[in-house]
Image (cartoon, rainbow, N blue to C red):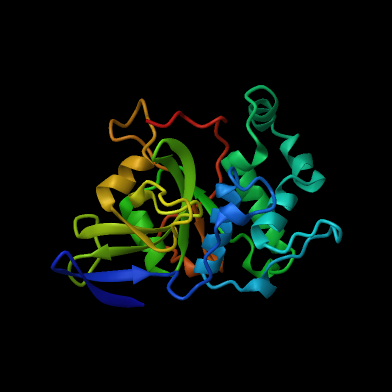
Length: 261
């Protein structure tokens, strides 16, 4: 649903798929609250597309005490079921054992874990998530316009971080890369536009100028002077994406990922 807002004296159209949806902060996670931005962003994306508490699998470990979806999902991501698949991939195992990445930091593991986790309760939506290794503004706009959400990562303030893109603001009636003014994010750590101060600042529905956000998530590329950007695209059903649009599928690429600029 598109609304109208006046920002700095300019009337803008605003598409925000997370309006009135539950927002999750990583700061109160029971599992590694300061490094679980990726799992929490996946849950924020899930809530953005309309999932409710009963849609998510419950923890198989009755003694864990985990009640938040991001803790339960992160528990599954580190489970033997997921790691059995990871061990079939030398590139992922090298990233974990040699380069000391946690499984939650690796895109393809997040993708595999999320899709198989959600398949437990909603096999009819499988797969719900796709990786786009060359995210563009055009594809981001198209996905959001269809009610989806985009999980992406970059350099936020002084550290690497993962957030959820939930909406856009734009000039006029039709969103295009040229008419975009802001990209709206759900940031599980806080408000990046305020330098994450105070520490308890809300990261819900933060409007970031397009150029700023696009620079934050830029990664160096030898073949593209503008760099490349990654995104996990999440939607309820595969057939919500029109056949004329690109398919967002996981591809086998070298891990770890290129360094952030």
